[in-house]
Length: 468
Image 1 (tube, one colour):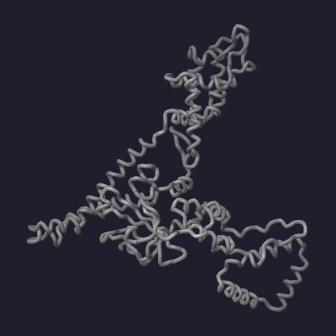
Image 2 (tube, helix red, strand yellow; image 1 turned 60 degrees about the horizontal axis):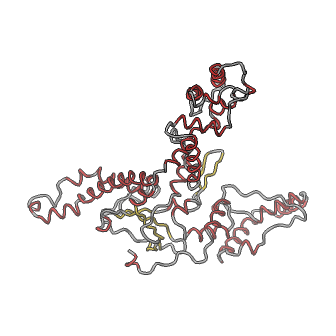
Image 3 (spheres, rainbow, N blue to C red; image 1 turned 120 degrees about the vertical axis):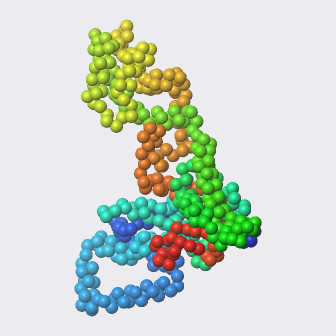
């Protein structure tokens, strides 16, 4: 494609950095920003020149006409009364009122200034899809929750390229945005679908991947229509080899073959990707131990109850363990993933937990530090590990975990994972997909060279019937 289009135009001139754009996105809101507390001599921040520095030439004219029309709604008596009331306000209250009026923002800009809105528009032009998605934010209100899409990812167009000969085993998707500098052009990002899934199986939930799967599913579902006799298979045409070729190429049979092949390839990519990105045994062990939440578990409580202040020197080990068990059951933690029975079994096991119970010959408590007690339990829980191996696994696994964000998608758990829909959706959208080539710019009227291309109807557009 790049050979046909020629030289790729630059997507950024002097655009702001991604950090600056993200800061603006975080500032955006559905509510008018509150005026700050003004102290001292009460200087009003901001100047007219700063506010209108980047305003288009006719926008000031529009503001003037709007303000003139608003002023005409006030009678001379009302204007005089309002001026008098403003003059009698306490200075702090009056200056806050003037600040809000001078720095009034519009809901259509999500209460960013003209300069900030223009900076955001210019800056996001050079961003990739996942970076645009990072500009999204969730706002909570009394009536519900709003998803603020400042990267305009909801306006992205997805096109599937899977029928050309070069895409037979490597389907691509083109994600494009309208060029905000030239609305007759689109900025296009080409995604390698199968490579993206192999690289990160979780991205199968990404809208681009999900759309491709949905398309192939619909083609396979419609295979019976393609298998029916048509003008190419009716006598005498069905006796011709050319008729068979035409039927396969233009009657939809090849579409079905491609769709089935791509669906199988997606399944294979999921399996291989999961194996390729498997955690090491040390990281897996660390995650499982994190999942047990030992700091808040009955094991921690049992260790605390083994302190000398809670024990009687005359009690046998069995009596001490029974007393700990009674206490644990009386103060049961409902949601603990570690059962009380396992803790008691550990304390009753010879050369494992029992060596921490009671007193030694010098009437000193045999309880050791929490770390030693914890490592001994884990070595008992996984007999193939020794306490020293447990420490080594935990240290190595912790270092490896620093390279992944365990809390960005779901509560780290291999036993009972939980998640929040908003966090999951944000994570899926901000996951980078593997690009097949550099971004390019295409005319707005460009369509993929696919005569039987079909997309889901745009139900927000009354003029869209789903066909192209």
